[in-house]
Image 1 (tube, helix red, strand yellow):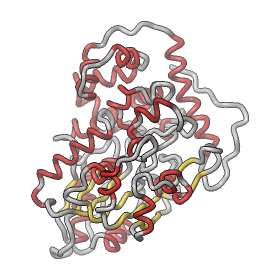
Image 2 (cartoon, rainbow, N blue to C red; image 1 turned 30 degrees about the vertical axis):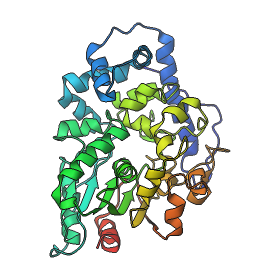
Image 3 (cartoon, rainbow, N blue to C red; image 1 turned 90 degrees about the vertical axis):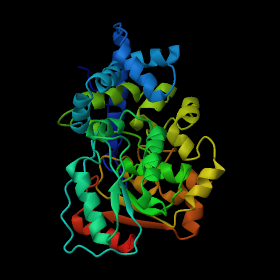
Amino acid sequence: CTEWIRPPNPPRARAPVVEMARLVWIVVSLSAVAAVNLRAGAPHPADDAALAHASELAGRALTAEDVATLRKAPTLLKLLARAREDPEAAAAELAASPLAALARDVATPPAEKEASDAPPIVVAHGMGDSCYRSGMKSITKAAGERVGAYSVCIPTADGFVRDTIDGFLLSMDKSVDAFAERVWADENLKDGFNAFGLSQGNNVIRGYMMKYNDPPVKTFMSICGINAGVGAFPQCSPSARVIGGACQALAEVLGDLAYAKIVQDILFQADYYRDPVRLNDTNYLANSQLARWNGESSTNSTWIANWQKTNQFVWVEGTKDTEVWPREGEQWGSADPADPWHAVLPMNKTAWYETDSFGLRTADAAGKNNYESFDGNHIQFTDAELYAWLDKYFQ
């Protein structure tokens, strides 16, 4: 058990940022967990199963530095071992975590539409969820019926257990590749498709569009997408009903370990963690997958060209979202580096827009960006709101 530390006299939140003081406390608290673990200095016995699984996930042999890094994160090691030796238990733990973004069941559309000329629909799920859970099955089926098109939820692994675990213990880059393989294997998608994601599922679709976009995503709708990354994980605050191993594992790596190469190679949430006070950190620029995707460390002309193959983008924000911080990142805003805990930059004032580092400004100039919102928390839109977006953009 670790002591959660709250800074004295936290700064008062100002609009448009929600509960900023609480988030400062959360970030400091999470970093404190790692510090307490390191100060304890208790030796950790070699966990062969965990290290072997980390090597498998990274796709390479672990270096001495990798092993040393992982041994500073004992809860993450335990989760790695459990994912390898008892995957059913690991999947259940992740699905029950405060981090999980589970889709609810969606009502059948009022009237099933006859088959139309609309492109097929691909759906991607959030962390802790799976294409094999009832909520994702429901929303995928309902979307297809509403539009009158073939619809499919694309997982990153076969079966509920591995698909759920992959939402945590598989890097963004590897998740994109697994997603792409399944897209290419589906004959119904060979001429292109529309796509929407929930929560971090949007990272997977976005990565596919940048790296491949062949067959192309015609319209991409990001619902509460973690597009610009997150600077905190509010759902893992000490006030959460259940903290659990997933939150503890994140707490261990959100400090100095966040941008270690091995952490970036195996942990999806670390890949989109964007600490607003470490944007010039050498390890962030060298190892962060999000920094590379957003063109903060380098630009990729192929990725920029691939982004333009998509005809339109729909950025949907939950105006009461307390799980993505800052929530404005769902529409490409970001914490202001000059005053990260109090101010948020709108999309057109961000560095990635001003430099057009991955094509966002070019798409905007072409009129491809569309914006929607709903009055609710993370992915808690209504059926009517979902159907209205589908009618407007996917027909």
